[in-house]
Image 1: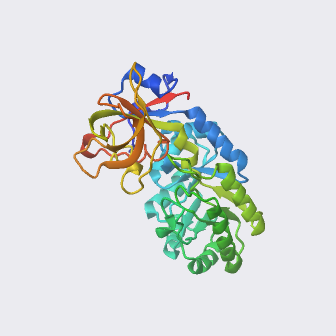
Image 2: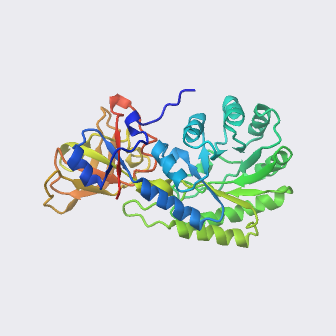
Image 3: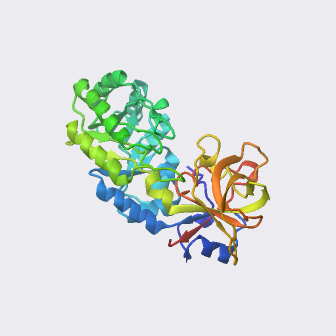
Length: 390
């Protein structure tokens, strides 16, 4: 199978040079293409911080950033498990680590991907939220007796999250009980999993979820071996006050203790919180019209999250080659390079009032999702990747 990855060959993890920072990149390269910076040391350090504060197994959500250098950095940090959602993600991790544990946590999988994952890539852990998916897994692993099955449970809507995952995934508690009972009959290890939602801004969401999950585990009447608390751990964007990794994990630890679930094997699927701050995106201003800056990248490229759906206010800073900005900060809007008026980002993004055509902007916290969501719409998908030390 040929894997299509959202980055060019020059982005692969043979790191020829490490720049000091984004300013150093602009001075040296004067980049005409959108250019990612990756700080793999920071990514390693953040992964270690998460693993040191978590009482279970951390499995990186590959969808967050599938760049090979990111996967390699996490392996270097000692991460031994990865949450994958497709065969290309499985192939990517396997190309870097032959021994990493792969957790196929997408609840709806094709028969072919189940079979290939099990027989070709040694995947033994699968999630599901419907009886038909259970039947599909059993059939396409030929009734294997070494399956680790996680039943995903839908949570009530979480208004404190940017995206509510339970609107698409998960069995309602009443439906999860017979599903757990059926899965127990064919599972070597049986687990329950949930996701509080992307970029959740209230650590209490994890405690609330665990309190709901304990009732399902109690009522199902079969032995449950493991609990996967998913992801959703937030990072601070502009103007946001979010809980720290430590805060979220302390809430998890306390809730598990009070729910008497702290004897279960524990798994988490951190993504954004591990990589967001380890990457930034350098873009160039191609034209300015008042407070509207036309950039060489936009919502069809690396800035999807800044568009109308999520309106993420990335932290930004202006960079001017061999000169300084003179004016105080002022609010700006962005638009991308495509011939599409949906390619707009309202921000506001605070930049020097004298920013002009030909200046660059460093958009921070783009280590999460930006690489993965790039498209080549209108032919504007190409980007570069460089490495920085800070």
